[in-house]
Length: 123
Image 1 (spheres, one colour):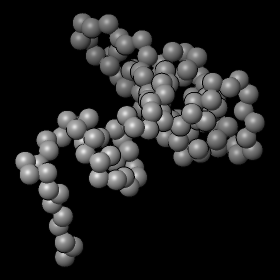
Image 2 (cartoon, one colour):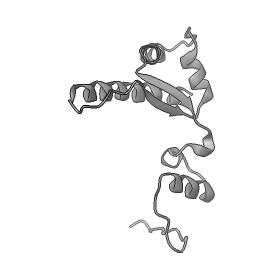
Image 3 (cartoon, helix red, strand yellow):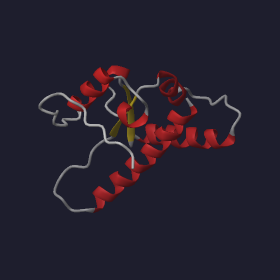
Image 4 (cartoon, one colour):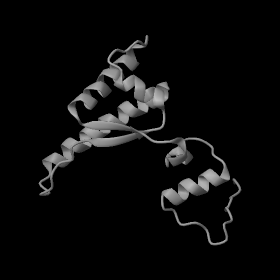
């Protein structure tokens, strides 16, 4: 859960930077109200929505305060996404063949014509 929380804080910081960067470019568009961040860890979402931080590590407490500030200011919003619909899973952990095919289809990768997976041998 700690890793997800660190990733959430880093994504929130990037979203804040990107929002301010785009606000300074005159595109003639309305700025976005908030950046939606999808998370598949319900405990991380519960900690961010909790008013008090009960942890012992100072570095996580600082990250918690930053995420709470971004949520309060409306810079980010956190949405829960089920594990089956999380498209970033193949990039972070090993998955079975069916799950890789489903998430690859969700990322709009073009499947191979004969459904064969090409495996290259290391040199």
